[in-house]
Length: 263
Image (cartoon, rainbow, N blue to C red; front, side):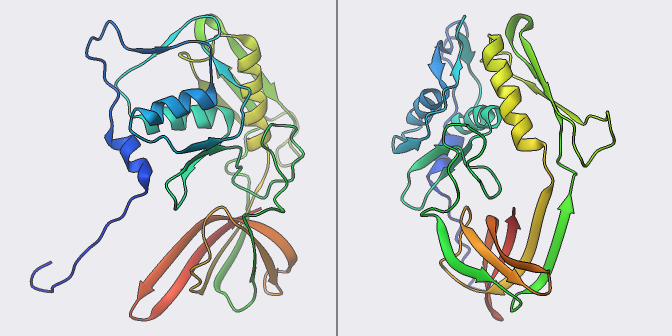
């Protein structure tokens, strides 16, 4: 910037290529088409079209287009892949080495009790010995049912649909907060629709427990870690939380991290 001689550097991870690349058929009558393909193979192939071939995944056991083919056109690989990830409650991200991950990584501490493939107890390599304590500032603890949904409806092709619901101790008896997932292109069988509904109900039928805090800057902190919280101010003793968001803030005042934690 002139005249302040300020340079602004914007950095992106490798997945920016999956946004900049656009899937568009040369012939609109002959678009990109798939049939009987697993979710992980579909995502890997879409990313490869943007030149991203370093890819690791959990085996999903979701297969799309079982009975008939489906077309993909006029969309970026990332947008379409994020739609697939949201259908099966998987998570998609790139690490600092440029590898794309497509894994069962829920946005809270995982306990391994869902029987879903890839659901691993969060006592693992991504964990850190870091402890959030009363030295943190701006501590805010919240419990919310804003994102809770205890009924999931899935619509697929040719009238295929599925419903999964459960009572919630956080809602009035007989009251259901519903969400609808529409996947007409990829889901064309009842079993896949039902599994999609089951997975999403497991993800959504729960309270959100969150902590916001500002701490002294630590370059080892990053999203998707599991850290310990031990705070008398919050009344929380040695409890693991998932790092949902981590901002590294550098200014003339110093270096701080702004954390958003989930449980």
